[in-house]
Amino acid sequence: MTQDTDHNAHRGNFGSRLGIVLATAGSAVGLGNVWRFPYMTGQDGGAAFILLYIGCIFLLGIPGMLCEFIVGRHAQANAARAYDKLSGGRPWRLVGYLGILTSTIILGFYAVVAGWCLQYLFASIAGQVQGDADYVKSYFAAFSSSPVKPVLWGVAFVLVTHFVVIRGVRRGIERASKLLMPILFLLLLVLVAASCMLPGAIEGVRFLLMPDFSKLTSHVMLDALGQAFFSLSLGTACLCTYASYFSRQTRLVRAAGEIALLDTLIAIFAGLVIFPAAASVGVSPDSGPSLIFITLPNVFQQAFAAMPIVGYVISIMFYALLVFAALTSTISMHEIGTAFFAEEWHLPRSRAAWVITGVASLLCTFCALSVGAWPGLTVMGVALMDFCDLLTANVMLPLGSMLTCLFVGWYVPRQLVHDEFTNQGSTDRRLFPVFLFAVRYVCPLAIAMIFLHQLGIL
Image 1 (cartoon, one colour):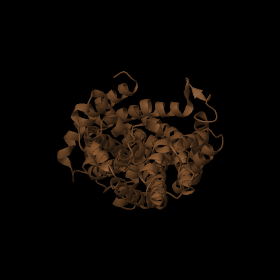
Image 2 (cartoon, one colour):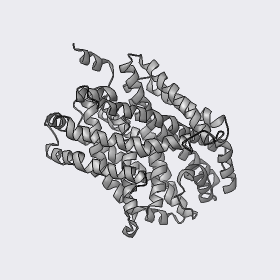
Image 3 (cartoon, helix red, strand yellow):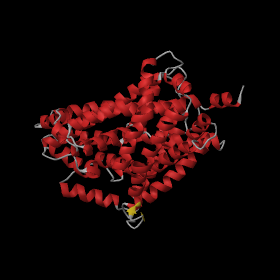
C-alpha cells in the first residue's frame, strides 16, 4: 500500500450522497442566508436583486464551487496538501494556506455573532427581549458591551463546534448535518407560514417576489455577485476540504447544483419570514447588522401582539434557526484547520481540533471585546472584529476564489480537470467546455469586479 493510499484510508469520508449534500450545503448555509441576504435584498430593491443573485449563483457560483470540488476530490487531502499535489510542489500551495487562514479568522469573529444568537435564544426562552423598541435596543447595547457575557457565549459556541468536529467526518460532521439541516428547514417552513398569515404580509411577499427592474444598477449587480460568492463560502477552502471526503463516484456537477439550489431556497425562505412580518408592522428590513438583534425582536412582538404566546414561540424558533444555521457553518470552518493540523503535523484529530479551538477562542475573545467593552481594541482605526470582517470579505475571499479559478482553469492539466468534472467521462461531458470557459475567463473577471467594488474602486 502506498503512503497516499494509507493516508486516504484513515482520513474518513462521507457515507452517503445525502450526507454530502447536507453537510456541504450546511457549510454554505449560515447567517449570510438568514441575515445578510434579507437585508441586502431590502437595500437593493427586492425581487430584481434576487433574480440577479440566482443568476450569479448558477452561472458563476457553481463553476467556482466545482473548481474547489475538483481540487479536493482529486487530491483527497487537506487544502494546503491538495493544491501542493496538483501543482507539483509549486507556490500554488499558498492558495491552500490562504484558505485555511481565512477560515480560521472567519471562525473567530463569526463565533461572536453566533454567540449573540445563542444568548438571544436563551433570552427569548426566558422572555427577556420582550418590550418596546427602546428596551430592545438598550438590551442589546448592555449585553454587547459586557466584558464577560459576549466572550462566554462566543467561546461556548466554539466549544460546541469543537465537540462535533472531533467525532470525525462520518460520526461528527455528517451525522450533525443530517440532524441540523432538516430541523433548520422545518423551522423555516413553520416561520414562513406564520409570517405570511399576518395582516398586510402580502406587501412583503410582493416586494420579495415581484421584480421592479427600474431598481437595477451596476451597484446592485455587483452586490448580487458578491453575495453569491459569499453565500457559497467560496475562497475559504471549505468546499475543497469537504470534497476531499467525497467518494470517487460522487457526481460533482449534480452535487454542486443540489447544494446551490438548497442554499438559495433557504435564503429566499428566510426572506419570506422577515419581509412579510416587517411589512405587517410597517418596518423596513434593510437595517443591516442591527436587523436580527434590535429590529426583529420588536417586529415579532408587534406582529403577534394579539397572540403574545405565538409571538413568544416564533421568537424562540427564529433564534433557534439562527443558532442551527451558524453551527453548520462553524463546523465547516473548524474542519478546514483541523484537517490541516491533523495531516501536516501528524496530530491525533482531537489534538488538531484543540489547536483550532484555542486560536478561534482567543480571536473570538478579542473580537467580542473590540465591539463592546474595549472599543479601543482597533487595527488601522477599525474595531478588531470589523477589521477581520473587512479583511476576509473584501480581500481574502475574492483573492482565494480568483486564484482557485485560475489554478484549475489554466494550470491544472486539462485532462485531469475533464476526468474529475465528468467522473472519468461518464457524465456531464457536454457541459465541460462551458465550465472551462467560465473558470478561465468569466469567473476571474467577475471576482475582480467584486474585489474592486468592495474596495470602493467600482
